[in-house]
Length: 78
Image (tube, rainbow, N blue to C red; front, side, top):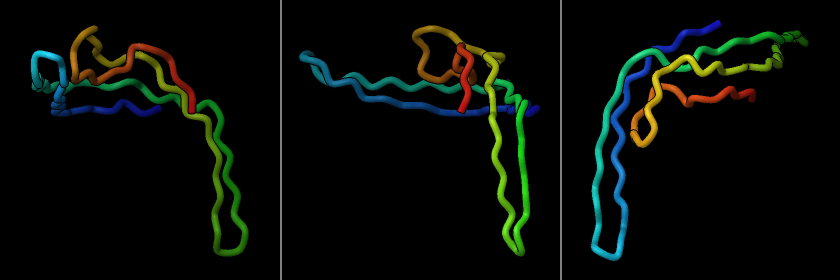
């Protein structure tokens, strides 16, 4: 299990018919927790291989409409 601390600054330019709108946002705090329920590793001569299944739990802060969010607000597996 990993508990990440996140700090970020995000900026975006939005092109509209009225012109370009620039937005900036920043956030810091605990991000989404990473759980690793399955992990395999093996070694062959001087090479090491591994395979894992990380699962991200929505534990970080999230606010709809905000550019910078430490969390994603949904479960994810890679």
